[in-house]
Image (tube, helix red, strand yellow):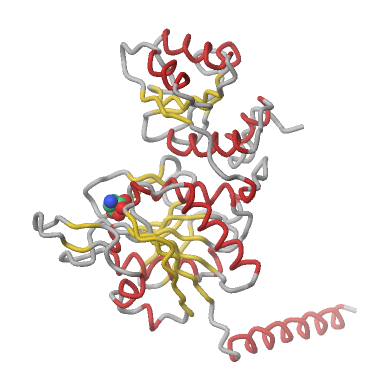
Length: 368
Ligand code: DGL
């Protein structure tokens, strides 16, 4: 009996090897689609100083040509220029375009992995937005640079090579959206621009890198598939705009005036970049209670670079109508709140669960 089973397994294995060999023989290299949006990686010197430059000057074909080694990778690379802007001008319209193009390319089986070239200033926001609205296993890897293509020791070429390697690596499947920068691979949920100076510009707000790239390939430190633990599904195709949602940066001895004013100016959501664990002075808390009673959704995040904002930590959130952003920094909490408002999610349990949703195992509320 055992011999029979062994023969069956050996037969199955050899079929699998033949199939895979056939695919490689057929020249079906992993296919990576590069979607370019601009930023410093497309920047060129503007003569203002020895490091002065203008972002979004070079087209993606030129950028790919500037990265020796891409054409010798066992990867089939195609590129499309979506926009060519500085990322401080990034907007929902471009986010939507990227999400539609990636979804379409996956549906039509045009590509196995995706690289998005992007300015570093808001890269973490675009990456997080796509991590929330895309429901795919294909890797989406963001990349940029701190030095323009025309500067000595430009970091763009190596970063782009690393990103293409990451997007074409089988181990990258099921990891959602990532940022690949200076050899580090970071999860879109926790990646943050941590330096305006250094080429190691990106860091993680929690848990560090999930992997790294080097001359030997792509190496992951964490298991894949964590990003699938969402407690909600968002259909972005029905969203035509994101409701006005403001971030209020909290300091000592501040009153709640800015919270009240932003609501008077039409904000439907407010994100508090609080001190410590999302804390704020008394009058700010009072203002949160007032605007929450008017139907505005208020989420507490933190101005602190690393860590969590916990629900019911120093006070009961329900007493002020606030939610805890958990592991999202203010910029990302804003995007998730805008998506929930756009999808008319108003159930308090669903809103809080969404902020905890990707961190499986730590749910204040289990969605009914
Ligand atoms: N203008 C900034 C941007 O496009 C430059 C920063 C960069 O790309 O590194 O995000």
